[in-house]
Image (tube, rainbow, N blue to C red; front, side):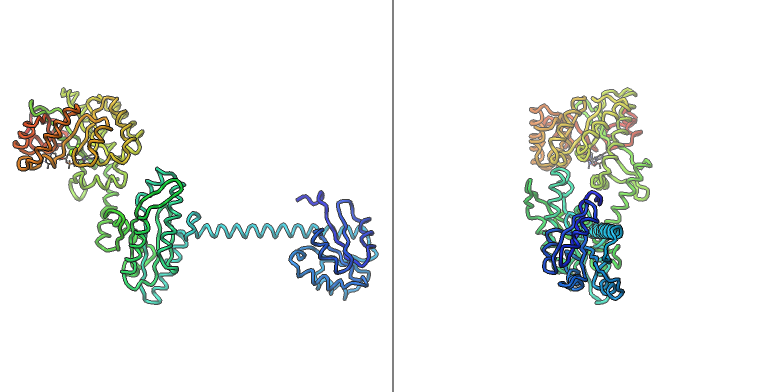
Length: 582
Ligand code: C2E
Ligand code: MG
Ligand code: MG
């Protein structure tokens, strides 16, 4: 604010206008002098003129200056306006009484003009800088308050955040110790939230979180603390749990609430929740242990198929611990060459020749020996590590295929399994395949990529687009485990598939169950009409082979010819040093 340019208003309170006249002469243009006659006129003038300074003549006969000053001090609007008394007696007693009533200074009759100007100016400036200071303090206070709130509450849902939650949990522990009473900590996670957030946008995600937080609050007692730790993770502290069944009941209510449709602005969303429960003091004596164990129970609930709750137990702890350990070791294995590939030949029934091979990953675990993909691929999928493992598999398989082709086995086709997760980052997959073919020198027609139908249904359009591009490069696309998923026919129509690999479950017991033979027959004749290749997986004996032949099957993969072999042994097989089916 520029003081010099703004008009400063001074209100003179007197029983006659003489003083105002004098001040008009003394004060320069940028001061506006207003006049209030006696006590009665003052308040109205203050309200309309909004003075920066009030001068009161306390020696005026017909008014009580001191009393007026005191009553002005009590008014909120006046409190901050400096008041100067005008007096003609340089009387100590008078001054003391004046200051006591709230005046900030005195001016003496007769006026000494420079002195009057100096005092008026000084007090107006003092007051305005004090007001600025107060405004600044007020601003800072509200900012501090805001920071304080932010430090304790989640701005989106207005629930206590992680900090405040930790405090409350600590307090609840102290309280529970004092009263020798257990309490429950619940961790709630929304299933599929990340997917909704990614596909429907963050606004929808935010809306969902707000609604979910309201629903959770709606089912707990007022004494229970609901917090949001971040993302889609909520917690509830349930003090004074008399029995586990109380937590059980609330968990059920929360799950029920989470599974009701969320009617959001853009669209309706259906999801579910997973709840983990830890009871103090049995499941942990510290805040960290309780949170960790409630989390472990929550993961277990998620794993059990979602839309479920789970109490913590030592058994669960061991399971989860093993998973975490495996995850760590898997990361190590990727860095330190812990994975290797076996190859299983694909054979043409009529010629008995090897026409290709499938790369099957194995993990040479430091303490547990060789782990089959069934033991670690699910976890790799869940943690996303499958993407890196798959990249390694593709590279190693293409390099081996290239070396065998260079050794003279030029018709071979290398089959590599893909994970659905790789289609989420479609461009990354394209780049991986292109780079790997370039680096290895393998021709695209010598590569076959296997996908599974059950994993494709989620992001069909995107996956289809990528597969079309791979297909155009000359790569063969095959549908693995055919017949075990749901929408086989729809998928066949939509995806650029050239080969069906009939799942082993149809080949098993083929010789006993005529039903299975009927399926095989139907699949093979359908494939012929759609001009698709068929490979039968898991052929273990001659009877199965014969039935396949009878129904027009031409290619097989199975123990009858060979189990998966290490690369050196597989080369031996190619060279005829190891007999096929031997
Ligand atoms: P899959 O792709 O269907 O591979 C065929 C599985 O059947 C292999 O199991 C193979 O050893 C087994 N098998 C072949 N012939 C017979 C037979 O005659 N009898 C019996 N009982 N089994 C037979 P494996 O190697 O344990 O692999 C299991 C699954 O793990 C694979 O099924 C595939 O889905 C997955 N997998 C393997 N390697 C990879 C990989 O590199 N990436 C991905 N994403 N998945 C892989
Ligand atoms: Mg396969
Ligand atoms: Mg298969």
